[in-house]
Image 1 (cartoon, helix red, strand yellow):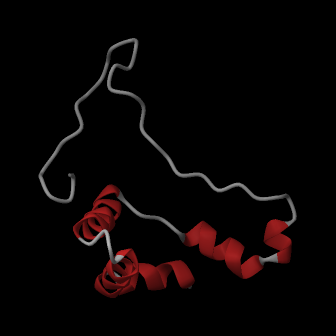
Image 2: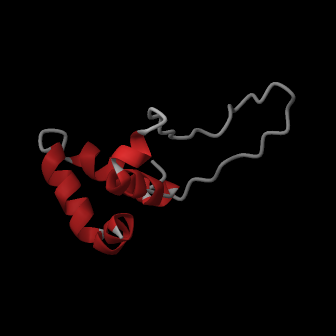
Length: 88
């Protein structure tokens, strides 16, 4: 919805955090992963997407639920500079 509409987060200063907390994506690996897989570890370290980028990808997937791979390929083509920055 954020990709489709100009939505804004509401400020939540209630003690109970009525609107919830910010979400995150985390990576877990065994302690020697980076040593054994340095290229993959660097890619994971470089991987960052903002709300707008994630929203655009989700929107494309939702528009073509029968062709998720095609939606992802289109998103990559439309965001090639970002994808390239992950692979540096």
